[in-house]
Length: 157
Image (cartoon, rainbow, N blue to C red; front, side, top):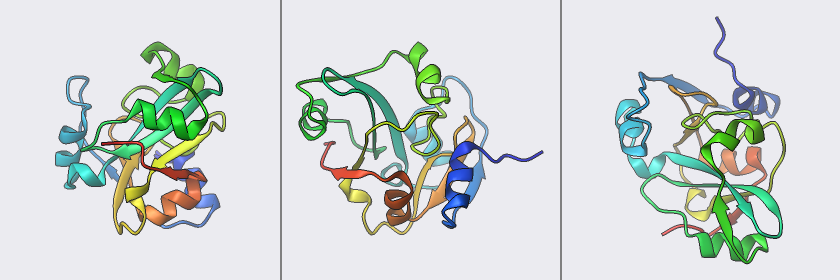
């Protein structure tokens, strides 16, 4: 059985090197600290993807280090919105093709404006969701910038 997800296919199509890391997951432990511990990384290396809606632009996505919190005001400003808010969990799958705890910044069913925390530049090893729970993709930070066509911004604190 192949564990290739849309996120993996996107990286393959760009010939970007990555490794897959599976881990045991459960509904109560989808938080960054738990996942980072299970895959042997620091929370700052694990980038979480969040799906939001802006009052002017509609749906957008943001990706930030796991040890930081998203700054909604900063994201609103860089995305051309007056305010942004998280979409409801029940909307995530319909919007992205992924479920909570498995949202990857790569391979969403639709291309949304995507904002990535600038600290990723130059990082040799980062981890993102592989597109399903229990699967992480390890790759270079600069490769994620290229693959995601991200706009880099200071959107977390």
